[in-house]
Image (cartoon, rainbow, N blue to C red):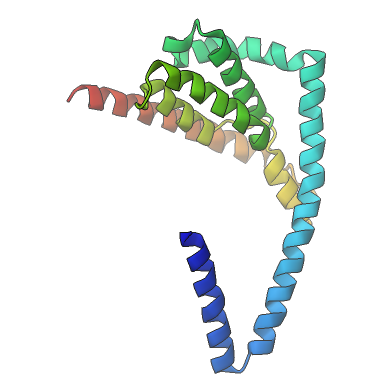
Length: 193
């Protein structure tokens, strides 16, 4: 609701300033161009996201995603020791991290929600340390292939949208490391009280 009021205020202020400056035609032209650019960007991103979602389905169908999930289970078991033996939660976590590694945040979200629901069943009404860590890891996920960012770059006319890979890898590893460190630090500080 607040965003609706914010957008309404921005549009109203644009019209008022355009009217006061005598540039109302330029404001309306910019609004039309912006809407057209947004639609073009959405269509160009849709193609790339469909491609990578299809790749995700092929990986799932041929069992490669399960193999990746199996590789991730020891790491996830160390990060989430309370759920190490909870197969449904660990499977959802593994699928979530696998999708995030491929840069498919939209495909990762349902698995993250499923894992969170499984975690909440053990401590209803309370955000456990593991649930907080899941939110941190999901927000600052490591991405091997940043498909969404590459789709935006390709839609904006970039000739080599994947040339950002080393920077994305470094930034995502740093953000996950900092997030896990902060979650563990706050867990210890909170328990100390």
